[in-house]
Amino acid sequence: MILEPYLQRQRQRVDRFLQRAVPPEREPLRQAMRYSLFPGGKRIRPILALAAAEAVDGSTTVVLPFACALELIHTYSLIHDDLPAMDDDAVRRGQPTSHRIHGEALAILAGDALLTEAFRVMAEATAKLGASQQAVQVTVEVARAAGARGMVAGQAADLGAEQTVPELPTVEWIHIRKTGALIRAAVRSGAILSSARADQLKRLTRYAEYFGLAFQVVDDILDAEGSTERIGKAARRDRFRRKATFPAVMGVTAAKERARELLGQALRELQPFTQRADPLREIARVTVDRVCTS
Ligand code: GRG
Image (spheres, rainbow, N blue to C red):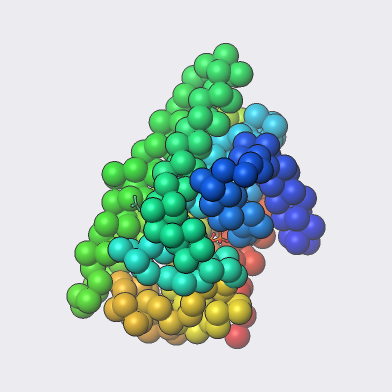
C-alpha cells in the first residue's frame, strides 16, 4: 500500500473534527490553543487509533472523537514541554513555540485548556454512545496514559535524568511513559471501541508498545542527526541538555539497530491480521525508515 494518500485522508478527517472542537474565536486563549493545533504535526496518534479500528473492522466514525482527544492531549504536552521551565525550546512544528508568541502564562493556559477539552470531547462522545462500557474504558485508559503514571510521569523522570549519566533501563522507562503511553492508548482505543477480540487486543497492544518505543528512539536519532528544517524543531537539543536518550547510552548506530529490531517485533504482532492492518504496518515501517534507510 502507498501510505501518503492514506495519511492525507485521515489527517483531513482529524483536522475537520478538531476545527469543530476548537473553532476560531477572537479570544486570546482560543487563538493560542489554535496556534498550536493548526496546521499541527503528523497527527500520528489519532491516525493510529483510526487504523487500529480498521484493522479489526471497526467503525472509524465511533473512534474519531477519541482519536482527536489524543491529539488535543498531545498538543498540550508539546506546549508545556517547550516552556522555559521544561525544555525551553524556541521552535515547534516549524514555527515559534507558543510561549514565544503568546507569553508563558497564556501558553500554560492554552495547554491546560487543550487537556481539559480532550476530556470534554470524550465525555460528549461517550454520552452519545449511551455511556457504552467501551467508551468509558477508553476514557479511563487515556487518563491513565496521560497522567501521573503515564506521560506526565515520564516527563518528570526525563527532567530528573538531565545532567546525569543515563543507563538503558532508565531511558526505556522514561520513553515508555513519556511517548509510549499515549501511542499505546491510541491503538488500544481504536481496538476497544471496535470490540476487538481479546487476542486481537493483546497483539495490537504489543504492536503499540514496540512501535511506541521505536517512535521515540527514532525521535532521539533525528534530534542527534537531523536539521531544524527536517524535524520542525531545534536539532541537537538533547545533547545540549544532556538528556537521557538512546543515542546517549548506546550511540547512533546501535540506536538504529534497536529501532529496526523494534520494528520487526511490532510487525510480527500484526502477522495474523488481514491487509486491513496494512496502514499500521506501513506507519511503523515508514517511521523507522526515516532514520534507517542507509
Ligand atoms: C504537566 C506541566 C506539565 C507538563 C507536561 C507531559 C509533558 C509536559 C510533556 C510530554 C512529553 C513529550 C513532549 C514527549 C515527546 C514525545 C514526542 C516524540 C513528541 C513529538 O511527537 P510527534 O513527532 O510530533 O508526533 P508532531 O508535531 O508531529 O505531532
